[in-house]
Image (cartoon, rainbow, N blue to C red; front, side, top):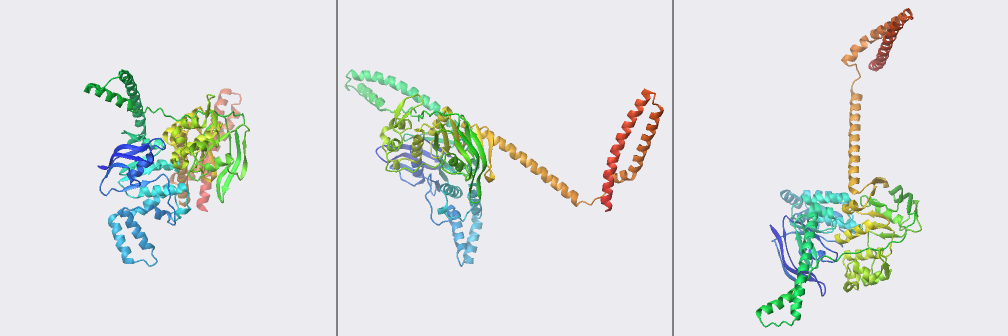
Length: 627
């Protein structure tokens, strides 16, 4: 069933259109990933579909009584609502019923008849599970204090509460703008499973390529106000886009050839004396005005780095606590010149704290961080630094540096460097306040790289950066002549870049693994399986010992028979050994016979030793039985 049909949607926030003549249909079984460069209009398109803002022109037809849930990129709610109340702030019929019941129960003098009536209605509509489901989703998202006031939460926690609300509230179309921001890898994997199992349409913006690959069945790329649609996941999109670009290059070449011929004809002074000539002139004008976008705009961050000496960074026995909570417990490591280190852990486990200690932004409670004299750290923090909205983008860069040397030895200006970061001259004087969140992140990244660092420390670089920027950043790191420390929940980036992993565990312990993210997961699975088997083994031993402890002590049937005859058997063996000893004296000069007797004696003594050990066990058991 078709939920939404859009025809020739147009939207601009200035002289140039952001969205131009877009037509799009969304079906109830669609799971759509919307991708494109920062500032290309992705969030604007989501807001138009969600009804948050209006299009300038065009038509949108929606199914009657359609219910749309929208998770914005930036969360602005606050106030005195609790977490659980915020989650149930939706307007669906079932949510309104739950809110009505919660409000009735919370009154100082609750009306028993009203509560009974609401309870019966909730029974009929089977809405009792909504609250327990909401708490389960919040818990999986790392929010466990359901009565906490929203205004006391961090920005990341508010985003997770908003995500829980969007997931819980029933909807025909779920729209998510960067849902994986502020989620750790384990939670992202849970969200993948949740969205795959969810019924209803999904439309989302995300930079997480593994997430796109596993969740969506359709990719829509927004490029220069136009959309390109691909029926498939992210891998399929990559294949088909490459084919499309190749076709467009071929078409552009053919068009240029035709244009040259038509231009030669026009220069001959052609006059529109006939219908045929008029048609040819019109054809020339159409070809001349036709636009071809061949994806030749790529971010180029080939910045030179400063020389790096032999001594890099040595972290020795650092510890850090906040109150009673131990964040880092006795952690040491030495950073090598070519290290590619990924840092993993749950939200709040201490990853950013470690980076801040290494960069000197925060002081450890104990331990040392020794940094070499030639080290020049480029620190890309999780949160973009405060920017003056009235400052022009180029002024923000020029305040830091006017010129920069590329890795090829070329000196280029701040303006030229901004062009390489897809800030054309026409946009370089744009006030920062008018840039999108992703464009601000890209500008912040440019400023960091302008310092020509030889050590890169990146804290969640994937937040708000588009896939194209991430891809080029990954290419830059591939060729970077220096060490890289990366905190990220982006499994694709971790798999591609890192060769060593540090994982924050309970109590501030940090454990190291060799290899990328996938290898770490394999090793972790083996460890968890080994621990589980050992726990099962210990539990079995415990049960066996408990059974033995509770069981009355007594001889088994065979043990009783053995105990009754063992004294005679021991005595018989002792007599045989004495007999052989006397025979050895008789045959002292017969070497062959003597050898036989000695072998027989050794055999009897071994049997006697075994029998005596058995006698000792049965004797102790007999004492316990009779005590």
